Image (cartoon, rainbow, N blue to C red; front, top):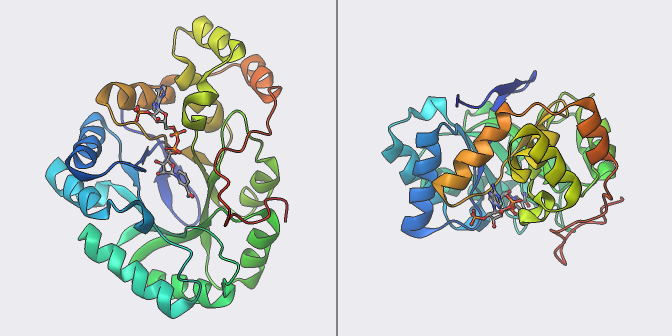
Amino acid sequence: MGQSPVITTPHMSMPRLGLGTWPLKGAEGQAAVESALGLGYRHVDTAEMYGNEVEVGAAIRASGVARGDIFLTTKVWFDKPDGPRFRAAALACLDRLATPYVDLLLVHWPSPQLDLPSVLEALEALRQGGQARAVGVSNFPPGLLRQALNLKITPLACLQVEHHVLLDQSALLSITGPAGMVLTSYTPLGKGKAAEGPEIASIAARHGVTPAQVALAYLLAKGDVSAIPKAASPTRQKENLGALDVTLTAADIAALDALPKGRRLVDPDFAPDWAA
Ligand SMILES: NC(=O)c1ccc[n+]([C@@H]2O[C@H](COP(=O)([O-])OP(=O)(O)OC[C@H]3O[C@@H](n4cnc5c(N)ncnc54)[C@H](OP(=O)(O)O)[C@@H]3O)[C@@H](O)[C@H]2O)c1
């Protein structure tokens, strides 16, 4: 099994498959990140809110993999809705990760108080300063994403949103593709639920792979899309990395496209109006 292939856009090069780290924490969390890096993962997703940046940074150093070979994403929580507070929080992320830069810095959620131009200016200053190699947003609905792109304050390289076989994100993909952005699929296994059901099981059986591998391969077949499944055990980490070796047929993809796609699993009370 090789290392993850990379998506290259005008703004960044991101390994297509990464490790999600929520809610990995403590010694167990550090061990899980180290194990993933040992298996060939080169993309790790964390966030200020996950409370595990210290462990993620320690795992990267302990792994023996050069920092420059790892694509590291972090995100600043929505309680910093303006530029100065956002910048201070981003710098604190770097301190906890004990790294001079992240490969991707994201606005974790749009707050109702979000001062969009001011936060985009902070992202651009961090990008110019080299503390973030690329910048982007997470959990932005289509209208807000368009607004952020139209401001042209900073090149947005990535949108991270919930995306799996049971949730359609074609409205967002129709924006990210032409904008040269990667859409990173979070909760790509639907917390395990996206790998259930007879259609996935029969496709998996036909290819001699697992349903989770089919669920991930379906996402990765969609152009500039990456996925960050979380798995604590080396066995499942290896299984998920194996999705990169699965090539679905057009008929498989059509069958998966036809599944109901209204199942949103991450919808906290502070979430935006997803249709806005
Ligand atoms: N930007 C955001 O607002 C946001 C929101 C949510 C998540 N995220 C990111 O996305 C990452 C992934 O999302 P998620 O953790 O919500 O969901 P997920 O990756 O869809 O699912 C994780 C769950 O699936 C299980 N699993 C892993 N591999 C499996 C396999 N091969 N077969 C069956 N089950 C498997 C895991 O269990 P074990 O670990 O026990 O194997 C865990 O319970 C997070 O860790 C985080 O980094 C971002």
